[in-house]
Length: 282
Image 1 (cartoon, one colour):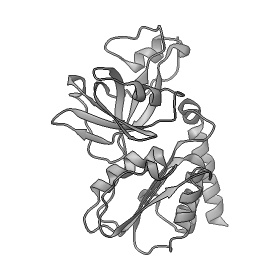
Image 2 (cartoon, helix red, strand yellow):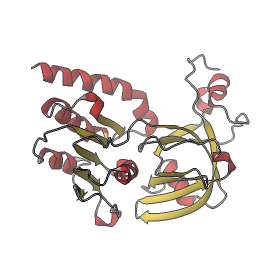
Image 3 (tube, helix red, strand yellow):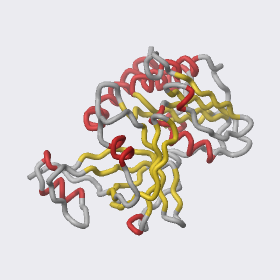
Image 4 (cartoon, helix red, strand yellow):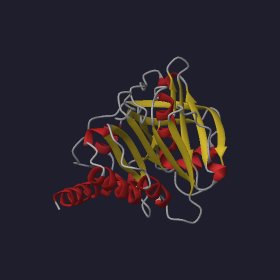
């Protein structure tokens, strides 16, 4: 039994696999559908995300599924695992939800599930959440991320107005991982190939090479926590971007699975904010 304080419940939905497509060697697209998504709502943001629920083997969960009841009534080791994924696309007319998965082989939960998904397979998902969409009133847009942020960046690029100006930097392992993204004429898209370099090193270098922009910049920077931390300091302290114009967060961290990263993420954010405050005051 758990006496952990209860969180506000996330909407519970069920999706059935309609299609699976290998976009690149390390990116798999799964399209979910069915009446279990009739209550799903997305579209206000381009970084909408859901938490996919993966049951523990041999554990019976309440029906209809209720995460609050699970946390209240079952020991922690029987709680299902959850993995967070961006809503790549949502069609409320056809009730089709598209999610792109980064696949690193047979390790982890979500990647192998996507690789082995077949039409008719069902999965429970919680959400959506989300906070960001590109502001059409901004003078300049900046989008930066690794593979984990590519679905959100792709969705965000599709929402840019035709007269938008800006820079989009996406780091992937190599040219085989690039995807076709249509950007407005005033937006420069650059694919950066990691090769054997540390994750995010090319992204940090690319943003540092930019001239400090004038006007209002609306930025979206997400991916591995190490490079996100470097760019957060650059944008907040050196460029002086307003907090409200910056969507920036570590989606994952080297050496941690999602459970471990989420457990320490709040403290990580506090430390980063403290370092930024000290740098700004010096």
